[in-house]
Length: 422
Image: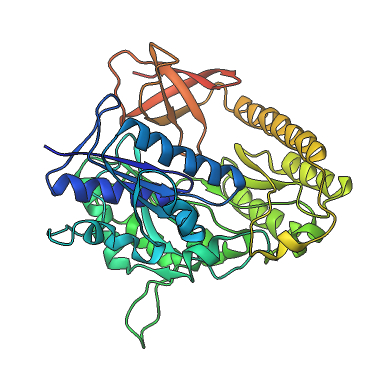
């Protein structure tokens, strides 16, 4: 039986696409190669959101070629879209597939074979399954290359998304995460003349699928959380009281230079609205450090928003120029030493704030959905509450994907410790 390896870097949309390649190949009779096994086909779904992502993409391609001599190396994704000629010159690469042709990747590699539909039925090594509802972006933030490499926003039909969700639930998944490059742009992509489904409509439809236990929505901008969307999330049967709402900066001056469509006040109003409706509602976010022209006062405003919001988790990105973006031409670049210092301050405060947030829940009883065992913590298994707090419990006979009621007995830097309630 022929073997394959799929490596996906970056966003959840890439992770979804990598799983779709995996499922297609499995249906074609291929088998996933184990770590020590050599593969006949390797697919790398690359990322280009930062210089570090570019470097990681090149590293993965070269490593797969070294470890799998003679294999077809097929490269796709955003770095391959932005730098196809560079990727073609990397030793071992046999195919470079553009993002617009990504769903036909295996048709291109195997023109003589019948290729299954590009969709997912499982989500390997994950308890929660990501379902791509939307792709592309129309925002053109000044720092971001994604609209140039992913193209304009386009949505799947609600029916297609529902069919995939039902298949995943039938295969045992309890938690679904609706994802996209800019999922707030979801428009249902239904026939002309009909009112398109918006994201709130999609959430309500997925929330009704029998067997679903938890429903989350991936990264979204604060101005996209309107009354209808807030209602769908706050009043759903299975929707989780936790959202990844993007901040990027707490400074209105920097947000305007980034071409973000909201202000610090809109962000805080969105958070306040959800938290007022449900005090247990938690938030994760993205923050860019060192955007061109960012002063210390701008940076302090970001730290102030972090203190006010008390994020459960912060994804921090040091700014790096992306060719073809407007920000790459901006003057007043922040010195790398200053970026490093601000990065450390954001990371330290994020850890401090998430610890304080978790501390409020010690003594509470909550339900977690268990995840994969972690080799670094033998005898324990972790899971997340509906509001995305990580909890560790004794493993005993527990496996991934089990709902377990726990009492939260103490807090640690790596998460809450729980005692199983029998």
